[in-house]
Length: 328
Image (cartoon, rainbow, N blue to C red):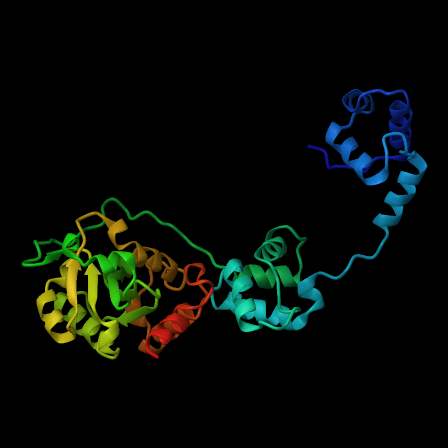
């Protein structure tokens, strides 16, 4: 497809003459070899009434507009805004989170505003440049890789004496009472390592739990240790899938005073908050990550970054802010 070219003076004169004879716009478009929409936009820009289009005046106006200096783009004109945007992109914020988060962080500064559409324009529409390269390098990337069909699976046996999710109190499903959590494991490279994830359903506050192994005892001790650092009022229940790492659920309940409810097999939507959170965490720890090579400090740094992001479901407050409000 040939690139679009502006109307020439000759084409504008033809348009003016045919309009004076009362010819329809579609017929004129066929004659001059232009799309009717192009001629319609030309008339919208350059005439005040059906019979007031003048070719020379329209040509002069088009030339004048094409030679006017453009206003500098917002990220170029405001270095402080640019630095804030880049810093948040590096932390893994999406353009929408940045746009809403800037309002929360700079409520009285009009220059610290940018729409997510403008950010996407910088990323994907504008010509190449140093600023665009910096933004692209920091933009969130997700990779969905299918697990090979021959990946070996661990042998399983039914978990004993557990409570089904159907027995869970209604307050958990409605999120009216905070303190109800969902849990899971992010599995690392070749299923040889894992990271625990615990997310509070009301505030979406997330705990990342370092694990030295995936067996039931290690997972139970690590989860209980993390949760016991929190006040009792935000430790009410835990919803989990029927993974073997939660076989010691009864002992976990005695240690934390949190009842464990188990989702039905192959029903990830019953723990939708945790499933969504795991997908977002994969931005920091993509599939193939060896969690044994990460220190607790590195994992907790990611936890802090993740909980500081604004969330639409929280009216663009962060999970950290919403969770802190519960403790006061």
